[in-house]
Image (cartoon, rainbow, N blue to C red; front, side):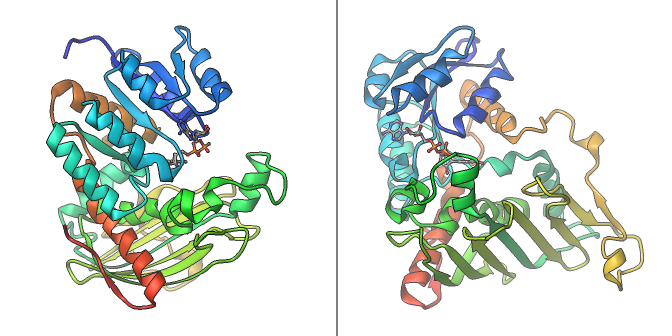
Length: 369
Ligand SMILES: NC(=O)c1ccc[n+]([C@@H]2O[C@H](COP(=O)([O-])OP(=O)(O)OC[C@H]3O[C@@H](n4cnc5c(N)ncnc54)[C@H](O)[C@@H]3O)[C@@H](O)[C@H]2O)c1
């Protein structure tokens, strides 16, 4: 591939595509936004026209593919459309970065994996939190089984959001208005697939372990409908015998968006939670070797430390920028990008098993193929 900036198309010009556009604008020497598609012409126009060199706009991604003129695409549409849209690009030989969750069903993930291999065209899952630079650092640290952590024994994660308050407060929808995230058909489920997918995937990324079995129970309170769980509690068993728990809650009334993680190793703990109102999660920090064990809440984080800033150079504080840089670099070099459909398989298989367990009330095995 020549050394002109990689020409990028975006499908879905909604909320998150503003972050993708900013990530493209942050690296003009390697990427440029040339094409935007949205079913709402005004949304496509707004995203495309703010550029110095305005991007072309389309209302249908198939027309966009026929028009060509780009090297790769970012797909950021409601979940139910991820598979169909990605499939059309991959069949046209265009590499795609598909927002999380990669697909709504495991069969769709399998089909995309097969299509990607057959067409020799990369499909990357947009698990953006993998590109948080602290996560990168911790992954390398944990996977060396350092004396300060050892091997993973158990973990606890949560993903809480008051989604109706977000829809009204941030998106400005009137009370009771519909949104695709409330609809189990268009979102592929509720709190698990839409937000907890981040933490579920992050545990895999940091620890290098895969999910092998789950047991889940949930609630289906309005305004969620069509089988979207408003909350779920899940137990996990990992492939190395470690275990964990998740509380996913989309009706966390009067609670700000909040994600947290505790990874308990043989010798230490890794912690991530918000430190102040307005943050949806705080920095990752970990217990160091030294210091006395805490015996009181007041000094529970005695001996903990945040990550060494000087070892995180070369990565942006913005995970969308890091994610795009990694995607662009691999496509230009013709190498395998990070977090392909194959790497993402266990995350999607875990989510599939959670939905099976929610349906049956029984433990479910996480598919391996
Ligand atoms: N990585 C992250 O941290 C993160 C954060 C938020 C959202 N997301 C993901 O990004 C995706 C989009 O979320 P969002 O919050 O931007 O949603 P959104 O509703 O704001 O935007 C979706 C856009 O897709 C458009 N659209 C609908 N059907 C279309 C079609 N057939 N063709 C083209 N455009 C179509 C809609 O008009 C809308 O503008 C979802 O997968 C979501 O889970 C990821």
